[in-house]
Length: 106
Image (cartoon, rainbow, N blue to C red; front, side, top):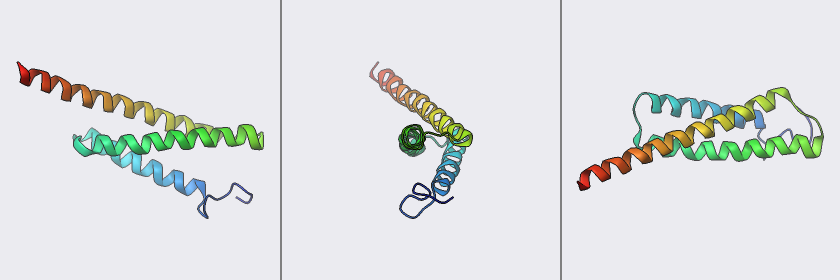
């Protein structure tokens, strides 16, 4: 890629996205295998940052370039799905902690 938006601080966005998705994959595996403690928080923050990046990467082609990339739209949809999943995981983790605290008070 060549052009004004081909790199961010000298790093291609595709490399940043690849690192993000690999990290989220590994964090997701850690969540599935039952290592919930710190992993829930570690999953939530990058998922939020991923949504912010998806919004920027959606608006850039829409407003500035006036062109869309199908691959880019697909990865933005995946990033939004990851964030939705992180909200579900975080709320279920918080709900479980609240239920345990309530049962301890009885």
